[in-house]
Structures are given as structure tokens and as C-alpha cells.
Length: 303
Image 1 (cartoon, rainbow, N blue to C red):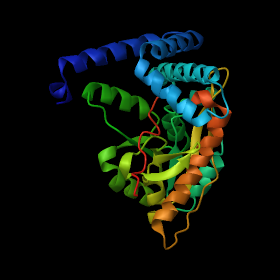
Image 2: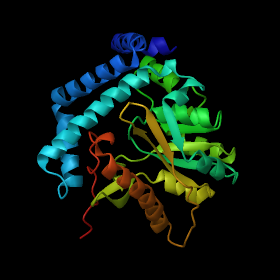
Image 3: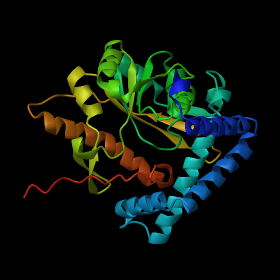
């Protein structure tokens, strides 16, 4: 049925990606990372729109700290990180529950287990940082059959199946965005951890908070669900190491408390998540995904 819905263009793109992935998996890791570096550099030079968005974001965040030249270098390094992440993603089938720990170290696994010990599930705030795709395998290996994450299905059904299979190969299961609330509530009831990539612009429906010194629209869902269910909030990200291994950090759980001002509660807990992200962006600015128009949505002037 999926093949009947796919177009000729869909099939062609799927063939290119899957064939390229097959080739990448046969390269030594060091060579594959050089390919990823090259892809990132090409992306930086060829895709002007994304380069300009990334540079604009960097200047918004760091105009008081870095020169334009320094922001440009961070921007280029960020694109290289994206290129490497893409290659690593295509090489996911080489990983399993045993050998993944040769590539990944984890700090704070006990925090995740402590949160789940409360029997209310856990909501994990995830940013597009380092190799963010690797988090699906890491959590699937850490808590087998107890991890889920929200994802947007792709329009190309063949490519969507290919990508989702990579993400789900270590027991984590994806929840389509259009079923996020219902499926998340069910997962939390079953004492599972649910990840939300919630660091990007959330549009006019988001909660407006201060992020990196400027007002930004942030996703409400993690804080709203934590306040509704009592599930603890955790912050987690993957940090690329100089040797292209990865260090996954899991924060202490935050046990939310409600007040008589629900909007203020959402703002408080969303800000606490984003403040943790800010601290890592300042440490490793080249590892965040700058090419998304983060500050696009601004509050409407009520005056």
C-alpha cells in the first residue's frame, strides 16, 4: 500500500538515500566522518538561505560575545556537525545494544531510573544538539521497550519508513505528531519515558519565554503534560566528543508543582528546560542546530 502511495520522485529519493547509506556503512568510521564533514561544508556553501538563517540566529544570541567572524566560524562548524550527524544516522544499522556503548557514554542514567521509580512515567526535553538522532538508540538501549518519542512523519512514505526503522531499531517507538497527546498519556500511564524535541520555534501557539536573551516561542507540551500528569521532567542531550564519540547527559528530574496560575507554571518549567539548553549552547555553540529560524515568531504587540 505504501508503494502505491509513493510517487516516482519518492522512489528515486529513497533509492539514493538507501544506496548512499549502504555505501556509508562499508566505510571505516574515520572515512565516513570525513564524508560527513565534506557534506556539511557543501551544505554551508550551497544552501544560502539556511546559512543566512543560522548566521542571523548566531548574531542574535552572541552579538555581545562574539565578532561576526567568530559567528561565521561557529556557523560553519554547526553545518559540519549536521553533516556528520547525517552520516552517523545512516550507519545506525551497524549498532546494537552491546556495541553502542563503544560510541556512547551516559551521565545521569540513574536520574532516569529514579524518575521512573515514581511510577508516573517521565517526560524528557530533548534539543537538536550534538547527534540528537543517537538519543533514540541510547534510550532504547537504556530502558528497553520503555522509551517513546514524538516525531513528524515525512511526506515521502518510503523514506519515512526507512528513517523510522533506523530510529526504532533499539526498541524505542515513535509516536506520530498527530497522536502525540493521546499516546503520550497512555505511555506515561504505563510508566514509560517520552521524549519531546522541543527547542525549536513553536509558532503562535507556543509559550513566550526568554531564550538566549530574546523572546522566543517555545513548545508547551512537555510542561503541560508534566503539570497534568505529575510526571517528572528531565533534560537530556548528546554532546559530540573530539573523536566523534558521544556523551549523553540526563539531568536530575524536576518534580513539578502546580499553582493557581497555569500559564505561569508552564512558563516557569519551560524556562527551566531552556536555561539548561542555554548553558550547553554557551559551552558548545557549534553543536546546536542554528539553521532553524528559532526567533521567527514574536508576540503580537497588545498595545
